[in-house]
Image 1 (cartoon, rainbow, N blue to C red):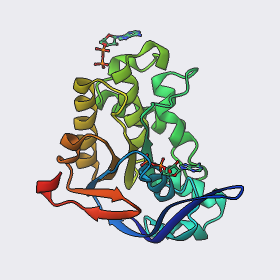
Image 2: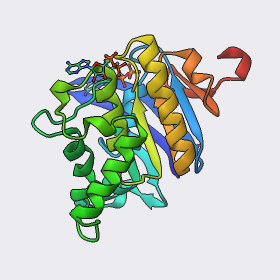
Image 3: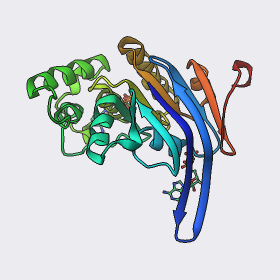
Length: 230
Ligand code: ADP
Ligand code: ADP
């Protein structure tokens, strides 16, 4: 579904070089859920950005839904990202001037040629918002929603194009423990129902343990942790 080979990243700012990793190989199968643990600064966000095509690696390849990211034009990469991937971040990044419904519809409307019409976008977004328990909040703007509600709307937005894979960068990191558990369970349930893969960066080992596989990024290496070590 999503994989990388020989992935390397070194940030360059002037003469300053920050090598993050050099030669990561990683693959996530259809429907599989993977947690990525690691200390702050280990490179988790960098890895997720590269897998999501938001940044270009120094070396190596990323494949998403069978396509080689690096060999696509910016436009083609943008479309693939929109269609095949969903992103959930620590902060919801909903657009404040749009309602929950409009925010969730947006990725469908931005899908380019061949994307579903507005009517279907509305139906899909409504159904997803209902499934995350926000059927009564369709016309509320983010400022009128609680923290948990906003994050649930962000999860609905990530899934509206029925992506092959959802990439989560501490998607529950900004929520209190109870709300975090609710949003996490919801992501698992939606991923199970839709057969979507999930790659999630988290600090929370208790949440990580619930996923199929736990990887740790440490000193530029990605290692699978045996269940006893998580
Ligand atoms: P994590 O998500 O595990 O906390 P990051 O991927 O954010 O780690 O960062 C990995 C390393 O790369 C850190 O040393 C960080 O300072 C550096 N880094 C991250 N983003 C940039 C950037 N845009 N420019 C330069 N260095 C960066
Ligand atoms: P959650 O557990 O989803 O974060 P909260 O416990 O924060 O929910 O909020 C409980 C209820 O109060 C929610 O249904 C929410 O709609 C409402 N609520 C919370 N904050 C706000 C707000 N700033 N404006 C309007 N309604 C709010």
